[in-house]
Image (cartoon, rainbow, N blue to C red; front, side, top):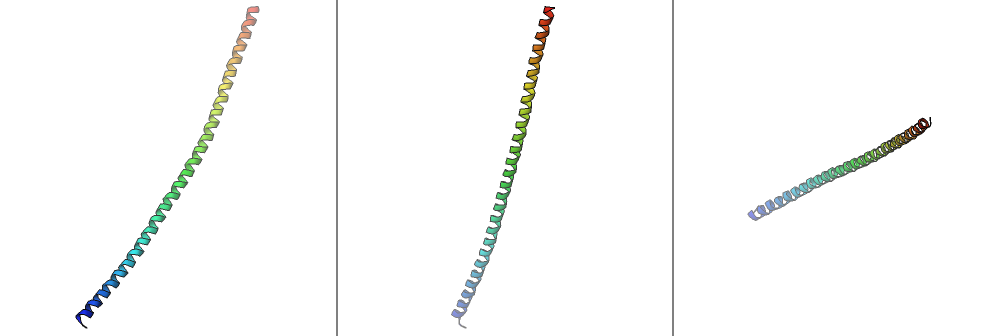
Length: 100
């Protein structure tokens, strides 16, 4: 085998080795990319789930707050009516006492 043939053989082997390394690197890159995409999708799904849960919680809290507000309003109105009735009763009693 001549020096030139030997050099050509070495060059061919080097090119084959580089091609194999490139293929391996591409495979690693694809695996890394798939893992990254899967991770991002998991994060996005988690964020959506949290947002949904937060929205449901706020809706529940809003309903509860509305119920509390309505109860408070009814209690206030009942208190005001009781005060008004008490005042009317006092006036009526005062008029009865002045007549006697």
